Length: 491
Image 1 (cartoon, rainbow, N blue to C red):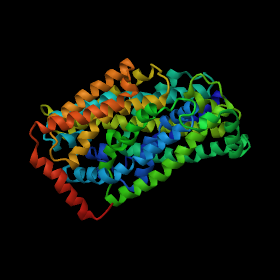
Image 2: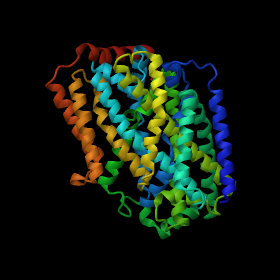
Image 3: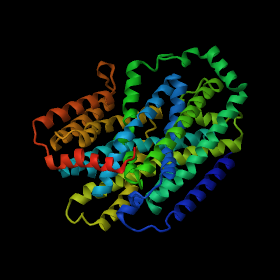
Image 4: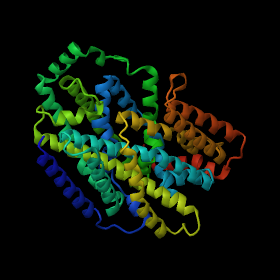
């Protein structure tokens, strides 16, 4: 693809994204609740588009397509498990929303700290979020690096692509906080969906339609159409990939924090239904991209280059390829700036807010804005390591966040849970995941996420039974919030 066309597409996208972000500042108040949560007034349609763009980042059209290229149809089952995990939003979404509305929580860590009556819980869970979400941000930066490098035939280096994504993500997040992120998300989600569906049609047509595509797969790659197929998706591998993805909607704070932002439970229901439809279409698109790249370019050394190579090839019209490139770039940046906002709010609220004069909301907002570029630079440093298989790295990051799931479930459904149980589960479980990932160890063939989740669950229950529970706080969450939700009559 011509380099001029790539740069032109980038310039148009950046100009439009900045314009939308600046427009979103209208009516904005310089306060913590507005900057990080949009005053808890977001509607379902905007939330669904923003949720989709944030979730389906470089992971989907670069990572999931690459995973399909590598292992076949098992990637479809892996992603469908994520969509089925959205049932957790039905149970936990209203509880997050009601807790935030009733008690004014800004971050999920703040909520857990208050529920278990412990500042240490808020700090420990915030630290865990930073440890695992910064590498996840780096995955998005790497996706942009691979995308621009692949589409330009190497004329744009991996480093240049990652730097562009880093600067743009920080800039959009600083302009108007979650407002600019949400509105630019909505813009890019529409681009992503329309353009990607168009590419699937063009690619399949080049192979004689979908019938031609699957005939080629049956003839040349039949093992890619079964599970475990070519051997990549063994049961242990599939379990290790899907377990973190099933709990993604409540374990990843950049996602669960959005449950605080909706204006009502009715809007939350609308968001969930729209997102499920969007997610199903986008999943099928990513899978078809991976298969199409496999048929057209069977000898790629790095599976993550499947999408960039396909878009930069003669099979796809250059203009359409650039539009899809912009959609993927925008999706990756959406995820990065959402994570930047969430982690900076945790640093401001859960670290700074628990020391000295940190209770002042104005100072918290200032600290949150200051640390954002620092977090982005750390993510960029990880991206430059250029580890393989974006999809696997994304799941590895989410595997670490699984250690917080027992504490989250216990917050709303188990009165006996204690702060000591949460700290033991998150600290020891998190360290175990890090150790297994660094040493690439898989005891009994099981991944770090499986072991981290099992150990954290065991520790949370065992330690809670031998320590004293905060009965008043527990009753407020398990009992009072349940009654408040019933009174709303939604969901």
